[in-house]
Image (tube, rainbow, N blue to C red):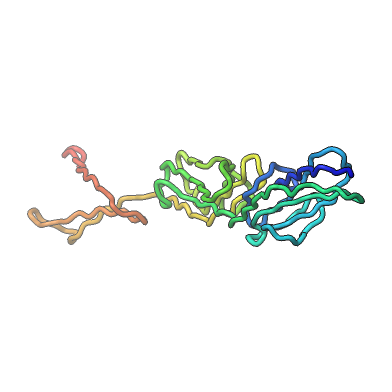
Length: 241
């Protein structure tokens, strides 16, 4: 009686996009994921494949590559496969299980320093942060005033001397460096640019005589607080009166 040794089935999780990117076992909801079963061993030229999830004995797919077009958290779990010889009696060992993790797509966040309301001529830094597991390197895209045109690809974009043309709403998002995953677009953050001007007023009647009390008031009309004021006197010589 002749017996055949079982050959080993090797399963791997591969991520595919339309641009054919590298594999990843941690993906985001909505990504496309492909499970691929490869069997290494001599003597069999054609295999039929069986896919199993979480140790179940029920076969959910019989193709070498099984694709989830838009994964959800319900697709997460451990997957394994094995093969049987097409029109034959030989079969492979069951593969080791591989784990697919599906998480919520992370959302980018915009911050503006030193403040969202600044004055003309100040230096302003826009920063995009993305908090989420699974991606170690992001490429950032910046948008202004709802435009679809990207004006910067850096995590931090600096405006050296702002003008009123720089005012408006800013958003950002990220895409995986060398991969296919991407973040959600951030909420819009508004940058306001204004021209501050000090206004001097006198809290007394217009006509004063020598010795009358008078209060000088200096005010800056803006959205900010915490101003420090400097006072100056203007001396006019008698010859210029």
